[in-house]
Image 1: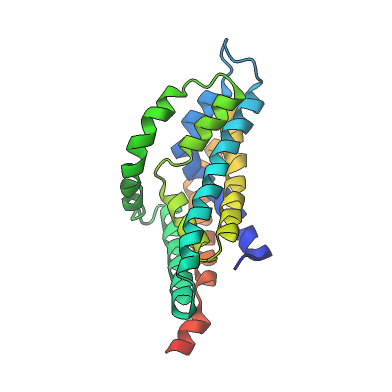
Image 2: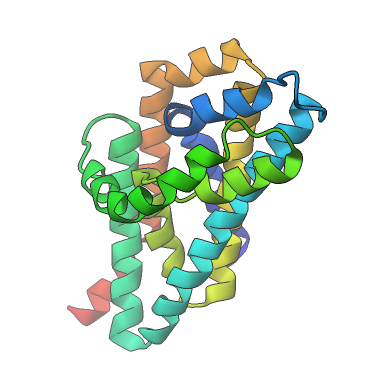
Length: 223
């Protein structure tokens, strides 16, 4: 599954999901980007450290879930993973376009893990060094997020922990423009991503990725 198109899709998912990322993590990114009197590192260094940790957490989650997908690999199991991946992308597109918010249920399920990590994240605020910012990103990357969860399920269809980790890494890199500019207080990009039309176009493109991912030929052969 991991080819140039899949990598491009992963990057695009992160980029197109920028509006959601701003809503979920924009506040913390802005906080990290504000250099306080006890912060010696430049704002950009702090933001890169925070986002580096966040993206690394996505890659780790991809490796974990991709390993589970590898265990399930095999004829029918692989086909079912591809179907699930395509359906999750379609659900993500509906979520980003604000036509259907069913992925919120996935976020609620993630609260079981987040309630244990939240105290650690709180202790790391405010981040005063790049190392603290990176550790904060590592923790914050596990914040319950329907966009991340759906991308994880899609990436796990690669049925290889290395490929799944790579796809999640690319997804995280795709989120960087929105997160860096938000942290550096670029209001113009935030306003653009918050526009309803922008969100609908992004949602439609993600839905198209989902339709492409569905193994329609395999389903026809099974029928």
